[in-house]
Length: 230
Length: 350
Image 1 (cartoon, rainbow over the protein chains, first blue to last red):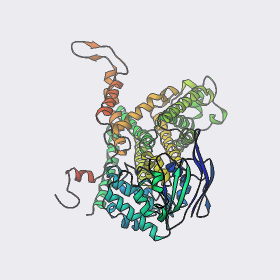
Image 2: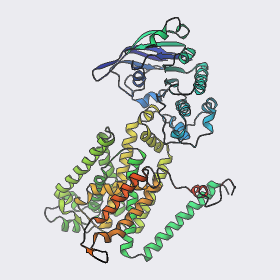
Image 3: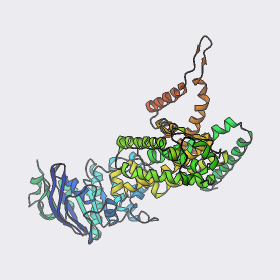
């Protein structure tokens, strides 16, 4: 579904992404792991067109998106949950969710499925995004990305700074979405246990390169944990 | 009665009351008071246009006086009669294609807005790639460039001499409907998906981009629409004062509008309307401060500009004690009264 070939990105004099290639198939969670500063978030931003790629190809559902601006990538069906749950603090929860529909034609509605996955959101539609707790904001950020019915969902460290019960909730949602079979999910994570329990396949990044990859079930055997330890 | 229906009736009643108040005011106020009232309406238009860019889209622009100047000059040159133009342009004759052009006020007002919007678009397209203080400096610079160009295009704008004897078209029945239209437009805009996209860009540009909002386009559209409103406001101001010259449109004018927006609340339509009317009236009421002051025991000489000190103090007080202005980014609604306990609660409880 998503195919990335030979992606390079430079910032100033440094080479941040070095020939990154991978695929993210539908109905599966592709987990991208790596220590701080290896270029995981930069890779996602490059995929979203928020930072320009120096070279390489990004194709999604047969569309060439390598040079497309962000909003075209979203229109193509890529939903993005940024790191640090960048919700709109001064908009209400409802307005935040409706922002997820920005790429769709007018009159689009937030699908009921979003509220089935996050029932708590229905009770706080009028509250301002900035007034929610960290965990609620993260759920709102995921719900907002799901409002547009994406074919690929990209999540950047959804467990960062979130209490365990909410992490379980998020894990349940990601599992349910993958089980539906039509959506591809690309998850960037540092929390090893969370990543391993969801991974259909894994990628490990070091200094801008993918150094190891394989089946999610083989993560333990492949010694991925050791690659992440400091 | 359902709250929605009751609120609609209340709004209609308030609208009718507003029209009656205008009619009474137009009949019974003296010419000075009417002028202040018209100035209030013009400041409402101007404050809303600046709030659209600064408050709702989060772009710190300081170029408003420039767009107002463009609107004021466009409208003046289009409405002045050939005789008036001949009288004004005594140093050098006006360019031939303008010499015999004279159109009615309303189309000229729209044209003023459109020309200002065009200039706004041309300025915005490059400048909006900048952010925060860089954008503020760039827009300020553009406004100064516009002013310098107006000063030096003798055959087009009559240069530093300005234009005198414009027809007094900015009457109560012109300016207040313009203000009401601006309020209605802003309310409509902020409730639309486009307005939501503007607020999203203000809150978090990266997240807005990631949601599929064309961030740059939203910024340019907001800036262009705001320039249109500024152009109309400038044109109305010119036809109220009946005299315009480039010195009117310095940074001080932008500052006055910014003062209104900040005092009223950045991102609040209600706040802008209240502050525009309040500040305009206060500016006239405090005019005595500019003259000699009699303290009983001693008398000071006239110090022009002293009344602006009051506004500077007011601004400082707001920045220190109420950063978000009068209204923050809240808006007026009829349910405010019931929430404050001044009327029956909508759910029927006392």
